[in-house]
Length: 110
Length: 123
Image (cartoon, rainbow over all chains, first blue to last red; front, side, top):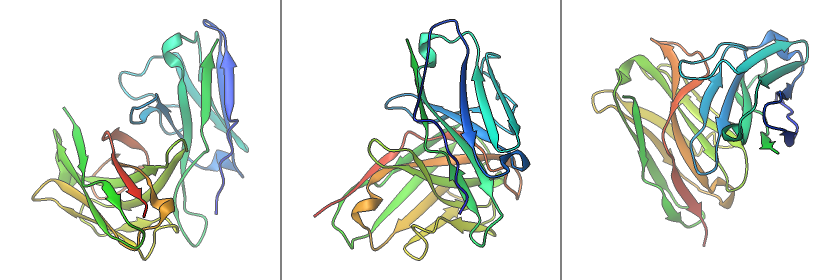
């Protein structure tokens, strides 16, 4: 089955740029979606179709996807961005198609 | 305002059964595919199952196939998950989530989520 690999943690100072990667075999050929989850809360969609932002998501959040890596970029990081972030794709390439989530990355704002 | 409210969670013994419900409001439920996603305590997100707007297309994760059944009642704006032969590893918060695509298909991203219902499988 398809595997998405994320770093367990990323740390960044306020005002700096955070980059969270999501690795997968030829992930550039798939559509990648990103979710933010704060403690005790449900996930929130922050990027869909690699780089589109839902309404209400700040422009500081952006995404890219090429080759074997998709990246969620958060510019001018704020304390309120501290959360777990998950990438997600739909994998239709195997005999058992399904939704795949990455293991999640905990973003710490220093 | 879109709202998804899960219910039906609780403590169940291994081998037991439980039926989760998700009540939807604030949108035309019959026009959207719906999903169940779970999260074990302290762990990441795991997709469980998806059902298209008219129930024509249904998908399951390998970990639940043959034990769980997803269904919906568009007249009642409700989504269900029948869980049988429960195991300790099914212990998780179960979220109901809406697919963002309007109509009969899937976009395979989830734009609205409920707050979840906790299922604990333990003797």
